[in-house]
Image (cartoon, rainbow, N blue to C red; front, side, top):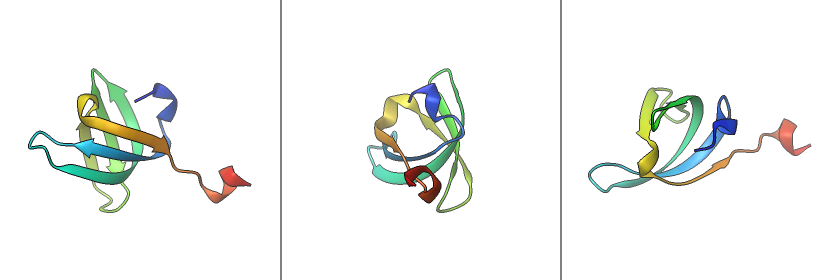
Length: 67
């Protein structure tokens, strides 16, 4: 995940260690040593993701960004 996404809202497709694939909306807090720390927007809980499990990501455009 590019560092430019720090602090941004991002939608990701992620594969966990067991092979389960999920789609999540997160706010990226930090990216370090192959680990992404973020807040999950649906649950409101902090989450940690391995960059190696990231299948796709793109920023979420807000109304202010789209104007």
